[in-house]
Image (tube, rainbow, N blue to C red; front, side, top):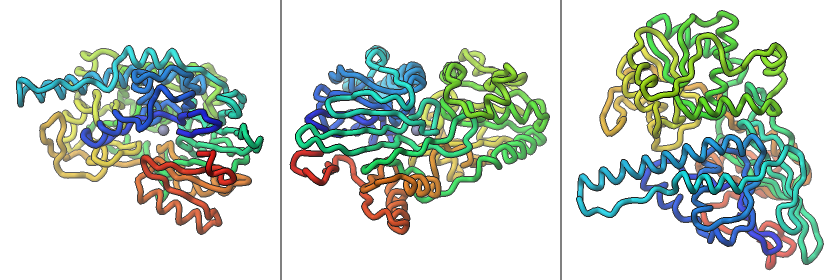
Length: 459
Ligand SMILES: [Zn+2]
């Protein structure tokens, strides 16, 4: 939350993901009164950035939620899906509680579909690089962040109403990478004095995207030959479409065997439709390879989208090699759990990890190759092979972050957020080495005076 000229503006309103008991309290309490917020600016549709918007509205927020058009369209599906998950989780918890104690008080879902619908009615779509007024003295522009479809860097031109002084303040949301399939590269940040930037991979390097196709080809051929299945837990937005896009190219070039590919997630099916409707976000490769030839980048001969639960269950009966892409990305809920349950114990199979896995999630346990994993409260031996492909990450890595920050003109102060502590601290050190001295790592609940000329007035 930033406070400017007496107005309160939220930059994103995400949901914490991780261990249930840690996250529930954090998600429930904002630390401020939602009724006092004047505007929300949303960087992108991922649930860890948008997921608490329905709760904000449930607790009385009535103002605008500004985002790009593609983010608004993605949120249409993602917030409704999130509400559904909240309700399912609450039902599950209540069943467990009642089993232990008949008189136990029922837990309420964080929010329901109606709250999500209300939040969706408060969205305003704005195009990239189109300045708009957020509140008195605050003008915002979105620039392409290259992270997921519709993702935006938020750049604010702020004029102090008392002194008339102006300064520029920016928030990256999640910063993407160059050469990601489908998306345009991140736009360089216009000059800015104060920057809030993510640090998810502040101390790690990704594999290059150009090797991703070759590695995927090798994996598919290897596993198909031994008759195994490839299970891909993937976020419904972006990673799923990138996987489809790569498999599509490999299949067209006859570089992988002719095995069936399933996208088993009702959300992914809808999200792929949103992708088709937002060609303004595509890079020139997608245009040249697909759009110019009137081909669909998100559909090909062996690809099937699975809608119903029965179709999803039928995938268990498939004998022989297949690729199943399903959500959720961190394996915390959704149909992926059934596919993992049915496939982790067979050593011919392979679990392909293509996204970030938060601490304590089942996805992280798979990445760590723990010998036994718990799925639906039952223990399973992890006999399947696990491969991690960082190339698919939609986040800038350490060198991308350093390069991006070093190119920003007039920079005075950098705030590192949205990363595990070790990642933020490393990035802070590397930034200092490159001459960016004023780097702050704020903690949850901290208040920081940004505009140092009038510290008693500004937050
Ligand atoms: Zn994100």
